[in-house]
Amino acid sequence: MTDIPIEQLQQEEYLYDSARRPSVDIVNGGGVLMNFLKSLKPGADLVGALAPTFSLKPYSFLEWVSELLQPKDFLLKAPKISNPEKRMLSILKYICEAVSTMPQQGVQQVKGYNSILGETFECSWEHETSTTTFFGEQVSHHPPISACYIENKTCGLQIEIVFQPKVRFHGSLSGPSVQSHIEGAIFIHLVPIKEHYEVRLPHFVCRNLLFGGSYCELNDDLTITCSNGLKSTVNFRSKSKNKCTGQLVRPTHNRDEVLYKIEGVSNQKLTVHHKDKPSLLMNAASIKTTKKNVKPVAEQTEIESRRVWHAVTKSIFEKNLDQATKYKTLIEDAERVLRKQRDSRGEKWTPTHFETVKKNGKEIPLGNSTLYYRYKKFDHFHESVEKKDE
Image 1 (tube, rainbow, N blue to C red):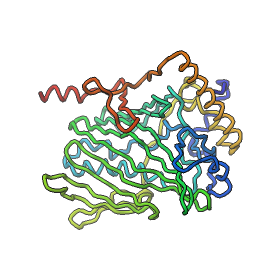
Image 2 (cartoon, rainbow, N blue to C red):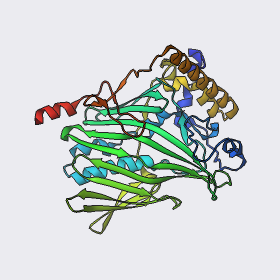
Image 3 (cartoon, helix red, strand yellow):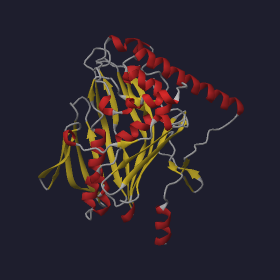
Image 4 (tube, rainbow, N blue to C red):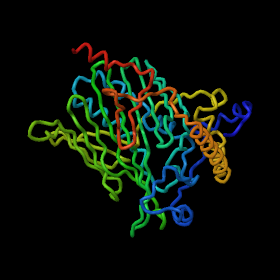
């Protein structure tokens, strides 16, 4: 990791002002990706590969999660919505707004830095009458697992996030592509009404990497299941200019009762149809966000995201990708040295702020290699609810 004087960090806080970020040039594949693609084989796992620097967002994966799932005012009102179908639509809108930011032209800035083991990111959002907080930690590096927690105590909202990105290279006659699948889940808890939602995200695919005209799109299904029995599914069709369809259903003994049908373009507008009456669910052009508050980088510890990656972020800000690659490599090499030292001593890494969730003494899996991690300061209202119900 790079050792930067506090005075310099103070002077360079402007790097984190989104309004001052330089414009980003679209990278459309072709020769710029040739050397990277030559080193890959179809089906190769890219999680540990050195991604081209132009493909990096100017912040870490942990901060990306906070950007993706930043709270919206309408979501904070969800616990007070009396109709369960309307509550589900509110959760669906929140997630669809989040993933609407992912499709794009080109392959520039499509991923955050790979957070190093033990790295943390913390921020908050101020609303009119409440505050939402976010805390994330990189709890595992092999495999790379990020665990995050969002909470608004005033509104009774808790969100648990456990993500493990899995990235693979695919070769085909129509051109090579890179597919990213986030194994894990998002758990949304509406505390006052004891209601819980489990969210599984769709795949993310970058296409036309070799011949130009590169673009990124969503693929496969987004699913949201609720403890009250309702379920929403949105299918993002491949190579369809981001078109998608879906439905909100109530399972019955014989079949699923379709309550709402969903259609639209994932990065533009989504419409829901109830009894043949359409209404707008989401308009990406009018999404409202709240300013994120983050401690100045000069006041952060050396394991906090912006402090860890500051030199890389500055280089990207200055559009000096060679220097960004240099600093990124230094950080990743230092991480490998620490891992080898732990392995030689037979030490097992233990997260500081999160712990695995167990049922009947066994850790709960959320995928093939992703365990359920929970924030240690999590308010275990689930347990108190279970005791009251007994």
